[in-house]
Amino acid sequence: MKKQKLKHRTQKLKKFVITGGKGGTGKSTVAVLFANKFIRKNKRIVLVDCDVECPNDYLLLGQKLGKPRERVYAEFPKLIKEKCTKCGLCAKTCRSNAIFQAPGEHPVFIKELCSACGACWLVCPFGAIKPEKEEVGQIFFNKMKDNFWLITGAANPGLEETGPIVTQTKKFALKFARKIKAEIVLFDTAPGTHCPVITALLGSDLAFCVTEPTPMGTHDLNLILDLCQKLKVSAKVILNQADLGDKKGVKKIVKKFKTKIEKEIPYSKRLVEAYSKGKLLNFQLCQI
Image (cartoon, rainbow, N blue to C red; front, side):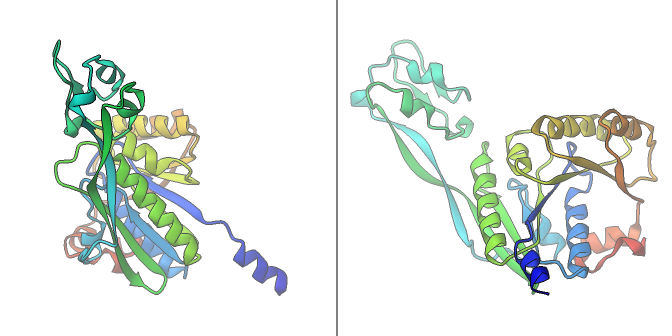
């Protein structure tokens, strides 16, 4: 009996990612349905919405975000003109092309393109660039049940580089999950294969790639499975709206990456209604 208790206390936190190359394939729907599945098995679970540009898990759960639990800051460059020699080294160093400098003029920083990496002020030999902290997003917290919590990252409107918000949201979620001894953390990512998606995928135990049987769905499934392979993250496929298209393309990609279709979800009007009413947490796939 003592051995069993010790095993329970040292149980490893499982980190699952719900992702997919194409937008609108049903990633958030699948994330909430997965959460529902684990809740009914009495697992302690944290769902993390990492689609910080357009978080919507809270809507599917019929919640409001309320006040931020934490605020996310990033450091952006500010020029000290009296120290600047107009050497142009900062503009040459910036890989985001966020620094414009006309011949003989001071550099101009384009904040919308800046990734807040800090390379420009590190490389400046004259100390003419200093970092300036600015709020770029927020982290929200909702307790759904005694064994279910929702954490939402949200970027400020119009922000181009959202990586820092995903990074901080993930750190906050993992710290909280360990504090409450959660068994599973589910990360719901943004669509695509860009940096914020990579940030969510890194260090995960398993990725569930949601797709649909369409040409675009098949094309983007290939991209996300290729990314998972490069990151050395195990991946399985969830085929949503499985009865509305040709599965041949999806099956071909699945075979190419030597993975499998974990679940096929047919189109369901009842599921759509539960989605639109924010009642997905009460919905089970066996109802389809």
